[in-house]
Amino acid sequence: MLDQFETLGRVDKWCRDQLQRACADPRSPFRWPILCTAGPLPSGRVVVLRKFDSESGSLIFYTDQRTDKCRDLAHQDRAECVFFDPKKMIQLRAQGIARLISDAGLTEMHFQRVNDNAKKDYGSKKAPGTVLEEPPCVQSSEQGSARNFSVIELRIEAIDWLKLSREGHKRARLDWVGDGTSNSWIVP
Image 1 (tube, one colour):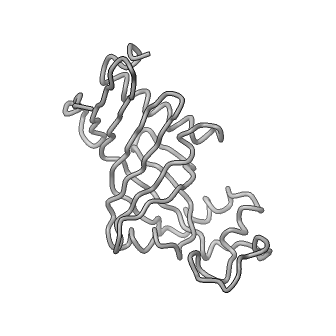
Image 2 (cartoon, rainbow, N blue to C red):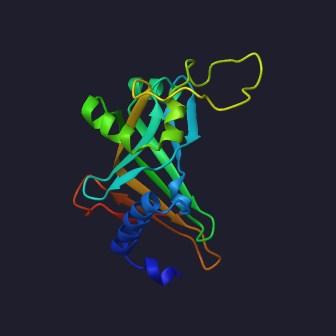
């Protein structure tokens, strides 16, 4: 199994292939990463990977623009996504610059890709995280609106890849900003 990862080039290709696969395969363990941001306190939450552009190294996620993660990113654009495959015992930490896409046309294009049932997630009159007096009984029946919908793009600058194995762990640092010459094996 570790022979598959004998070169940094193979590790890099594997990372790109897995991120691409995660967008198309809802069963991929990389479909549901943890997005970590730095607000008043460090914060992490599970998000759904919607798109990966291998050329630019960009990850796309959807969210309600009223969330804490959007406020966090408005103040600190450094973010990290943590992916983990429990069957392969591989962790991938994608670090980079995150931004909220402000282009209304691009945001609307992404919103149209969301199925009608999921659009309701963006229709709540109250912002996510608002304190309620009792638990909500049903999902909002309000039609979702692009008004609350936002797209987060994370441009990966570096990948920290870790393969856990009884045969010996392997770890690599991949530079996705430069030409790859600074990619290196590092101590696990």
